[in-house]
Length: 164
Image (cartoon, rainbow, N blue to C red; front, side, top):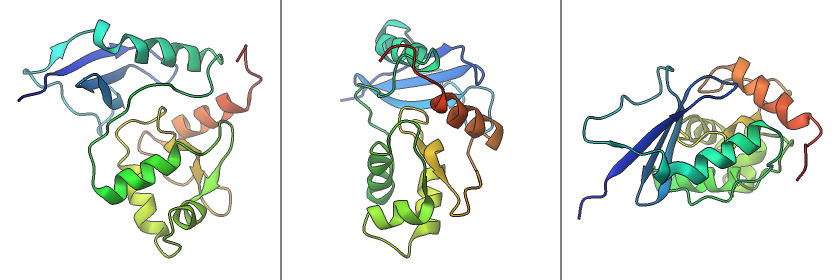
């Protein structure tokens, strides 16, 4: 059975976002004009309603009123990538860890580079907070959407919450 891919766009402080869903789950969240964003496939169906909960929770996050997302997320990746992405969801709001610490958390202490690659392949940024992983020396290092956006997200999470 073929699952319909649904999509919508949303404006954000980081730029216009492309949200992609399959089977009722969020499968992708990208900065729409970034080179890592997929092109909208003609077979996809534009559907704001199908991604309404994602839109609402992102709006709350950007307003400072949400610290955790309560969404079904099903990114496509290898078992190793999915393991890394799952562990990213355990990094607390406003906190950061290093790639080495993330590698240790998943039981692969020598795999910091592989963890970094998996982190960089995360197709559901923000909701799966890959921006919370930094270099061992505290530097922002790389980020798929650019270090300015990573810096913005980290600073955003350091502000006082509006009401959560």
